[in-house]
Image (cartoon, rainbow, N blue to C red; front, side, top):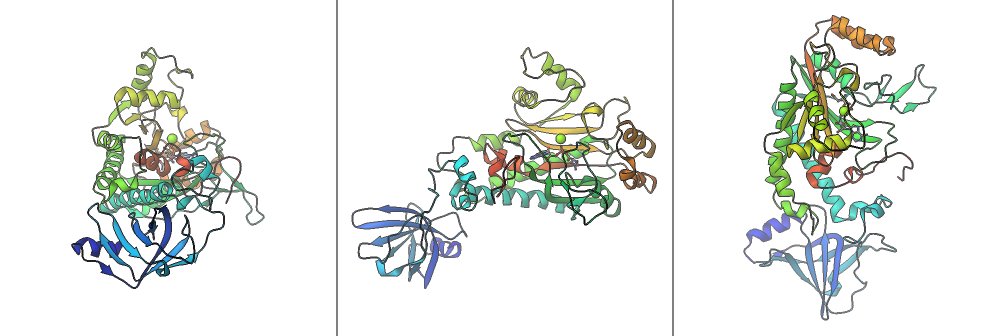
Length: 437
Ligand code: 4AD
Ligand code: MG
């Protein structure tokens, strides 16, 4: 359909005649003498309106069926719609429906989540996946342009990168040691960075999250970046900002952009994106805590220097500064073991990027590259150091200052699309409890 529409667009009203065209029925509007049957084949977001003449069709067109239109003559109307007249005998049924469960616009997202095998037939969810594809492509394109190499670290691993004990263990006789699904590829990326200089990966991470929220998944996708010869947060944050702004800019140039969004979408995407293109606030954890404490707001979760920020604090900071906020230099006990200790001996060279509404989108840091300091930290935390010996030993062989970050893809996509629950930004969501498909 896409190619036919392109030809019809340049044809100035002359019909494009083709042998046949096939698609799924997305809408049926019967009038007195004709029936409008809208079909799509997935190559374009635009429907072909089949104007079905009265007669005795061999079947009743209805939502979800797959059909073929024989000998269509496709034209673009003044209202930009593409249309073809069709005699009943020229509309052929390929795949009938029995109890098609999805009403394109009326079925709610919670109901659709319970129909994983059908839900992507809706305009909203199929467009959301197309949108996600664009976001991922642009993110990787920016990194490719900066001479990063995409690599493929393993999913099966024996280490808990974040040290948070949120791993899914595989109980198998296959291996002598416990094997987990990775929570983050960072430590493997650090190995590869020592060979390649600048690397990234885009792959799933698994966390045994109990949290039943609109921003937590047990299986989510992270774009992780690791770069050598980086000793300051600033250059990492610059890169994150560049990557996300490039996404926004390239999305803004998308042809047919409004078609990606649901009709009647009540979120003002244009001003949301415009805000993202402004400068982003950068504030230290210490200043953020001070701003929160002096705000006069009574937060549900207590806050004091040394405590991690809660999502309500994150939301307040974004509201207060009117857009995305980088919070830097957290106390080391709020963060993972591998972060570079700052000269004050209590905070680390790290950052979280917070977005309005959704909270943390990116976490990153400069890594501790000094052997003794890292060894002490691993011991201080009572982490099984023999499992991390190989990681520690990297600091003995040609160590370099380096750092990186991880972007939560579903959170970023959700925010950019104005989609309130990240469960809908991944094709088949996995959260605590049941897995449907
Ligand atoms: O802050 P996190 O835990 O950072 C790391 O894992 C680092 N090792 C990354 C790195 O430096 N290479 O996770 C990074 C991002 C979060 O900011 C969030 O966007 C997303 O991953 N994330 C989740 N997204 C969905 N569901 C979950 N359960 C998530 N946990 C983290
Ligand atoms: Mg984090």
